[in-house]
Amino acid sequence: MTVSRYLRARTKALLAVSLATVAMAAAVAPGAAQDPVSGGTLTMARTADIFTFDPYNTQDDYSIFTELQVYDRLVKLAADGRSVEPELATSWDIAPDGLTATFVLRPDVKFSDGTPLTADDVVFSLTRAIDQTGSWGFLFSPVTSVEKVDDSTIKLTMSEPFAPLELALSTFAASIYSKANFEQAGDAAGERPLGTGAFMLDRWDKGTQVVLKKNPYYWQAGKPYLDGVTFSVVGDDNTRVLQLMGDQVDAIDFVPPNQIEQVTGSGAQLQKIDGTAVGWMTLNEAIKPLDEAAVRCALAYAVDREAIAKNVYFGNAAAAKSIIPSSTAYYDPDTGPITYDLDKARELLATSSVPNGFDLEIHVPTGDSTRLAIAQIWGAALKELGVNLKITQVEATTAQELYNTEKYSVRISAWTNDTPDPDEMMGAGLDYNVQNALHTGYRSEAVRDLVLQGRAELDPAKRQVIYTQIQKQVNQDCPFIYTVEVPRLYATTAKVQGFMPNAQGKYSFEDVWKQP
Image (cartoon, rainbow, N blue to C red; front, side, top):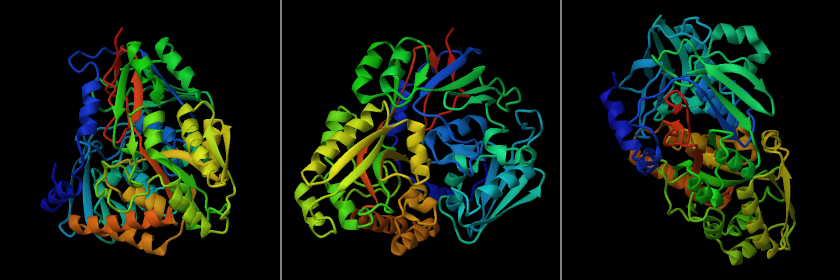
């Protein structure tokens, strides 16, 4: 791999991320010493359905995780959790001034229909990815063009140096797909994916399951081992656990923390990814009085994070001190973190337009015992402030749709960075030009300017100053209410081998196999 000296130094300095997460995943990853067996289908029960296969419009984890099976990218996040390694690109070079980057493409790669991958497909896909009107164009905002140099080389041109370039290119948003298929599918492109990934779409029974089958033209020889992967929609926590324990499914996501011992006691294997996600309560500032910082911060000081960590996550979580995960570069826990303080909450509320309280609705996915418990703990504290929290349970996919269309007041969720760099979270959540600041309506010119400065700054020490300043300002504006550092919890049956989510909690199945 050809990488400039400047890039190597920058990558080392920028991404000093703890490897504890990777070590934890490796410790529980099964089957490393066994020879893989080909064949069989793996079924994973997940809490909600996907929305699309089009990375340009994707806004939910379920669609992201499914796209990771179907598409490849130029590079992927390495096992160390802080650098990238080749995928569709075999080598690359970033110019010393940081304004151009060239990538050499892997030869003889084919799409799942047998047609060859070309430089034109890569240019087409990445040109859509950098479109600033798309959901994730901000991830590539300094990239002004993507050009074909020759049949095996593409070039990216930047308007200014771009610190997280390679990490941004490792995300789902930079997925590569067939230009011809996309143009032929038109508006249906989000339902007719054609990629070079280990799997391809067999069928999508909306609301029920997504069925993937092996890509017969996959470029990694002998892989995938599985004949297919099925993602079934099972919103109820107890049902997912019972299906896993009864061998009706091979894997589940969002293992309820209160059932970890039950799951592992049954012989199932737990994959626990710490430090990459933060629980959030997202606030819609279009709903009064959530447009007032004093109200939002009062609500934030009413969250008993220690109680949530202890009673909801049974010690598997820790109180959050920032909107970004602690394993993310430039995390700073000493920026005036918000703690549980009802007196402070009362003081803030007294300065607002609703000093005596108000009614507030929160959406919780039906069957999600974890989020329901968080809402109940919060609601009990809010009652002491005169705030009446109405908990409305809706189907998980519906909850996501209400959020996407900004027809919600408060939503419980979690943010997981796709990379160890803070730019993704900062850009998505704090830049009002990006998805309306993750559908909150938060607007701060000062914070947005800092986000853009952090993206262009190559000096790690200067980037730290910028991101510390952002975290301080967020603790004063409270556009999001952070709760706890949330572990990503997955479980598989003992037959599943090689399932190991990466350091950011993302997973793929090209290396997974099942014992007969």
